[in-house]
Amino acid sequence: QKEVEQNSGPLSVPEGAIASLNCTYSDRGSQSFFWYRQYSGKSPELIMSIYSNGDKEDGRFTAQLNKASQYVSLLIRDSQPSDSATYLCAVNEGRGDKLIFGTGTRLQVFP
Amino acid sequence: SAVISQKPSRDICQRGTSLTIQCQVDSQVTMMFWYRQQPGQSLTLIATANQGSEATYESGFVIDKFPISRPNLTFSTLTVSNMSPEDSSIYLCSFGTPSTDTQYFGPGTRLTVL
Image 1 (spheres, each protein chain N blue to C red):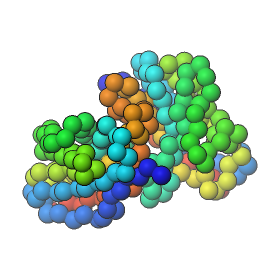
Image 2 (image 1 turned 90 degrees about the vertical axis):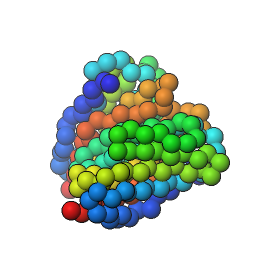
Image 3 (image 1 turned 135 degrees about the vertical axis):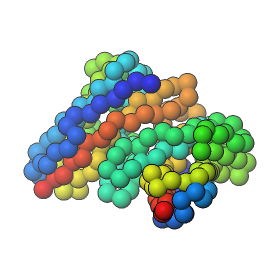
Image 4 (image 1 turned 60 degrees about the vertical axis):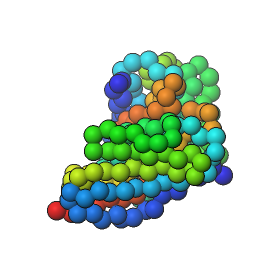
């Protein structure tokens, strides 16, 4: 059974701090990795994709991938209360089109 | 990127009835997917909707319960048949971009079965 694991949280950080969200996956054949943000009552919104080992930065967001350790993370710098949401890690299944989702980490940013 | 919409946005249904959810993309896409998200849970893939052929269902989901149509490259429907309260969930469609495996989601349909 191919799995994607995340700590469910909640992860509570003060406004302005760095939030660190982590994800591990079991399928060594996975090539594509995604972070989605989901506000309560809304559908998932893609915020980052990463395909190569290392870091990828986009504004306040940095995705980090380590395929040897089967680990992908998301850093949110200068966290804002509007970042409070559930963050879903998704990994493609082998070389196919399907995505496997983690259970999500709930982030709370308090003023 | 393309815009994706779903109808209805929410519905309350009686057990034993069926509901058809529509998903429309404003441009042609190859891959469309249907997911279920039960309260407090993550997304579970129901099936991949293939244009011109039968949908490919994931383990635990069957065509009799969740028939899917994909008549063209911009549209798909999911029917939830013979509903029970356990089918109360959010149903989401998405489309994929084969070159990057990226998926974009519709706004979802919140279904409550009484």
